[in-house]
Image (cartoon, rainbow, N blue to C red; front, side, top):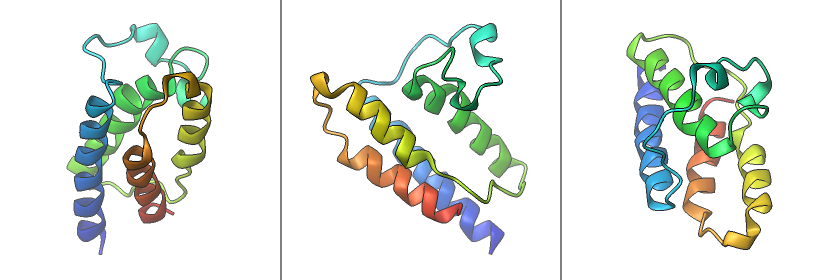
Length: 110
């Protein structure tokens, strides 16, 4: 069961990266070590939500899968994404696919 869940989540993480790139939310430069060291949930004090997805969420889950670790059992990323997208409403991102990927991750890990 764990292996199947890891495989599904790994596939969704690839989809997430592709969607961030498609929406031009993928950054080529990593934030500072200080910004990444935030202890506030979602690093909201130092990173944008899209940066947190790319530089914290994705690598953490990828590492957990590679090490065959138990993944978080309560994932609620979609509401954060919806808030992020509402705040960027003036840019009109076509984010339905991004939300679908995050919703699928939430369901698999909850």
